Image (cartoon, rainbow, N blue to C red; front, side, top):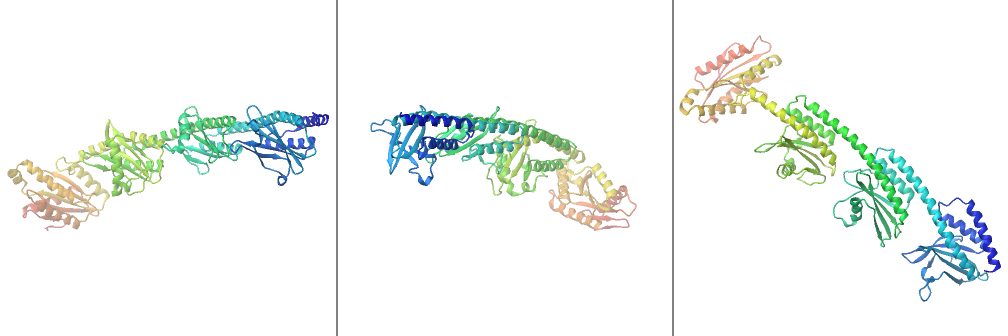
Length: 618
């Protein structure tokens, strides 16, 4: 080097040393470069200095930093080919002239990386020697490499500070969505030009303010890398040229499993640097650990709530509710706890599947048949669970369906079914809770049915399936205490002994059953049909006037004559009671019995009435 160049370069290095010691803004690489280029311009006394970065896809260097005003720039890109000799060897520098300017371009390359091009613009008559330029190139390769590493290191230090703050914040939160929000916010701070998505399963979290996409488990080729990351728990990377971008799929995993995938799309980047992949992996693992803790916390809270729900439900069911009341309570409990729109309970009989009273009205309509048939087939014939999030059945618009079998002592008794119009409304945790509820309540339902059946057998006549005499007495006595009036009918089958003598006692029993069926078919649900004794039957009509009672008796006489085989007739005695008269059940029976005796004596197949004053034949 010439003496002048040597002094010039030593002065520059002294000034650079002073600047390096006082300058602390190394977090932004471009700003560091600009300050350095200004120093080069001043100390080497050149017109302008520019730095160009290398783009491997286009094989050119693009302008990164310059001391010149942009409109005065000679070029914005430099082709890598200008640094190739005729035999293909790489040239360390290139000198060319433009107008009255001399352009010197120094190729900066380390052993592992092509850093860029340092361009010096000077007057044509002020040339540097090639030895001097190569010395500058040698020192600047070392300097730029260290500056770049320093800048990168300081940048990474700040990023890891953010990661530390993220870890402290999300591990202090027990809410899953708070964890996810903080992860996305940190990524946006570190990589403001990137795009992010959280790939989660359907029964996970769904917040409108988070960039969540459902993780599809079907064979979607575009989603294969994400599924690979989810299944293996390893980072997957996709690099594409058209469009030019790099996509990284980082599994969000904890100790117990993978909870989702973090998708990071980096535009205009051919390949993710290793240090960036390490940082993203660490961030995803931090998020996975916090997410796992939040999930475990929410699961524990949900488990406590589920146990409380089961405990409260069983406590209520064990208060000896009537069977229909128990079903109605369970339907309301499922609607409230699971948000179901329609809830039904079915009992599997030998001949048909019976919808139990207390189910929502939908299950008593024809529209429910397709849903019931579908669930029954899956449970009764195929033995499968029924938990569907996007099903299309029948004309109704219900998309979410849960059906749980009711099993007692390994015997399939029936099933509970819940519906909602919104797809994927029920979670699998809901299904498991419903299973637990139905499992615990099935024994209660079975006991309630057995208890009511036993009560029915106690108060029913086994042959006619009418009420027994003692139950009739109890109900009339209660009615005379609570109601204002009522009518009573005694029924006797005419010539019943002749039926037994002619056809035999078995046919006689069948005739008795036929008459009892006529009575049951022609009275209200609140009325009481009973066997009085032998071939005599009775009907009590609470809150019914004498006129209405006579009408019922006449209808029974007509129906029995027309509907029995062998044909028989009946005689009826009718009486009534009123609250404002001093009366008793015994006196009511006495009046009615006297009316029946008169009907038998005056020709049979008729109705005789006896009130408080008189007796007359209808």
